[in-house]
Amino acid sequence: MAEQLDQLFVHLKHWLVGHLPDAWQPLASILLSITPVLMVFPGLFALTTVIERKGLGRIQNRRGPNRVGIPLTNIRLAGFGQFIADGIKALIKEDVVPRAADKVVHFLAPIALVVPVLLAYSVLPFGRNMVPLDLDAGVLFFFAVGSATELCLFMAGWSSHNKYSLLGAMRAIAQMISYELPLILSGVAVIMVTGTLSLPKIVEAQNVYTGTIAHWHVFTPWGLAGFILFFISSLAEANRSPFDMPEAESEIIAGYFVEYSGFKFALFFLGEYLGLFAVAGFGITLFLGGWTAPFSWLTWIPSWAWFMGKLVTMIAIYIWIRGTVPRLRADQLMNFAWKFMLPMALLNIVVTGLWHFTELAGWNIVVRWLVCAGILIVPYLLLGRAFKAKVGQREYRYAS
Image (tube, rainbow, N blue to C red):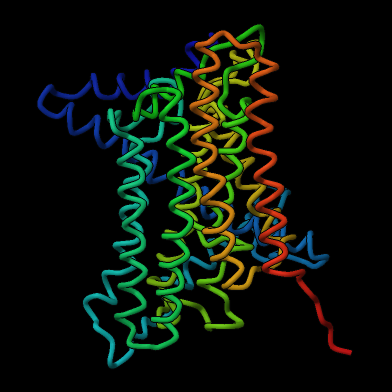
């Protein structure tokens, strides 16, 4: 029964494809792999916008959306229809394009932002035997399509013919390139240990249990450090607080999309959240076991439920951070990337190699943990102290 529930969507796809003529089956298989991605994650985006606004309202002791509701018999989910109202508003709102703008590039920028993000989902394993495109170089494919977003942001900022837009685009590109380095280097550690660039094989390498505990990479010192570095870098890559400098309204109005309105603006909003979900799913695959259970006695829960549960948990943490952590200054953001994150990511690669070779040498697990953790903790303390001394303590001033 557990196996049938786990492979429910796989069997359903094969059943639907099997009822079609042989000539149509390859195309139908592709469409049935793409359609769930195009339905589930944009739907998750819509719900997340409402949950985030209501959650931030609770954190900040105010009300979130509480008017537009969805009537269900005698129950009215107040506020959870807000995304429908926002979507209708975006569709009917006037599309204003600056007179001096490059209209073709201005039009293509939001479309070119969403397409690479959707392509990134094609290599993510959402469950056992549930990967749309099983590439041997899936990790490289994910990073390759993800790097296309920098070009899209530049297109948006440059084509608007607005100095604020161009400044926001250049700052966004500088931030994303800076934090891509620790993001990629943290993933290199996983590749070194597993010896593969295939995301399903990386998950399978973690689908091993010692006693009742899974061999998730996050349960190792290099994996824990790599996951923390990856998580922080993912915040910067997705322009999330406290790294939301490209959209700092108090400084540069609204960043690279200041000259966008209507549905084009909604596409930027959609692309940002879909990118956040994609990079969260990628981190889950690399460090948190993907669709595997943390304990062997929980393997009866469907694999796709584990993946979505981890993804929802990551989204909740992103919302929590946005509501509690203040925004960094631009100089703090760049210094943190180059003077702290990058050295720690490089050091983590060395520790990963040490972890692997000490295992081959037959070292005790406790000794390996202490040695590798010590190599990471000491530089962490030294770099943190030097960074704090250079940047200085943050001061808050209030109007009297």
